[in-house]
Image 1 (cartoon, rainbow, N blue to C red):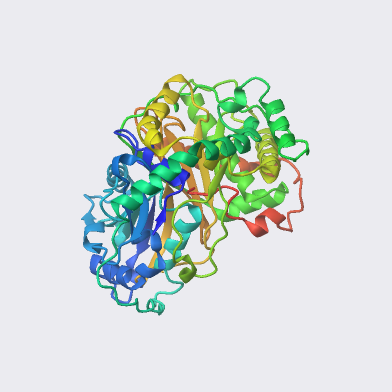
Image 2: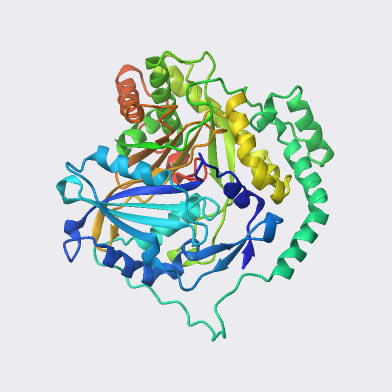
Length: 517
């Protein structure tokens, strides 16, 4: 049993009638490689029963503190009713991407039932060519990009023949199933936290002040950089802060109050093309990914006569924990250890080559600043607010942020994934499209991508009242990739095309998470 952190609890508090705070993924499989020639709900349930001990977030449920006086607790639920979490459906003909996206968008818009462990899986039949899809969502309070990847690794295999998984160690006999902490214990903990909350808030404020000029909205305050430098000096850190570009997010059609509806779209580009551009221009794949997003958003805004004269500002989630060495090491991991980099996207730069250079420079500046920051500003901002107040105020604050002007225009996440084919119950995974969260405060669009095998798969989630033509965004991503490849024939490379850059070799989780966190 453990208590949610302030950041984890914030992901619960942000939910409202128009906002669902889970992350998800859509995997498409070819069941012809399965020994049985198919992928069924029964096979998936059997797999989950065998491997549930490898994925702690799938077997944890919430225990709320009375009256919301304190953050909830996680308790292990050894008797998860898998049948209530795993659903099955068949798409209407012709079973194309449009039908798949419509079903996924409808499910993605629904909030999870907090009375159970916070996840759902939907096995989707009826896709063209006999393919099968699996949509799976988990609440963001339970996972970040690393733990999400570990869940995927726990369920998938490197060959059509499922690997043998060691059964969990027998639990010691217990006279009764696990129970949430008692009422008196919860209230005692709430009272204690109430007493120490002012001290914790002051400590969090001091840490956050040291990065004031890198936090959305707050960075626009007068002399934010001077305040940040003074706070670091008072804390005994006299180092000069790396320069950060202006982080004032312009108003766009993406930003404003959102509705409860969602629309999603999928797209892919060859990973070889991303790496080719990265090698040729002496940069990392993350720089290329961010340029693709900047170019696609610029094209969409131009088509809607809404391109601002300032660059869009993106929040890039960053994972702070290392990936587990094996699926079994994921046991016990639950919750988030993430931060975020804030960076301009150079959507105001017209020439593709100059845009690529501008995105690389801005992201490099964000990385340099992140390297010397406390990296905890996201946790610190959440920790300043008592849980009882946060649960009531957060939806209203986010709504007002959408009306008054967002701190960022959108969230962009990039999760490095496996470079070899993976299998579920023997069925080969053809693609994996991650999907994330949209909110009033962070924009009515989010772009998430994951590398897998020889592809870079994108998942775009939007509020359709803000972005009515979501499929045009994935089309613009493909056009942006073609644009960058064309640059290779127009200009000499700036790097050594025969060698990978250090960033490309490492492709670290956490430059853009996924997330992603």
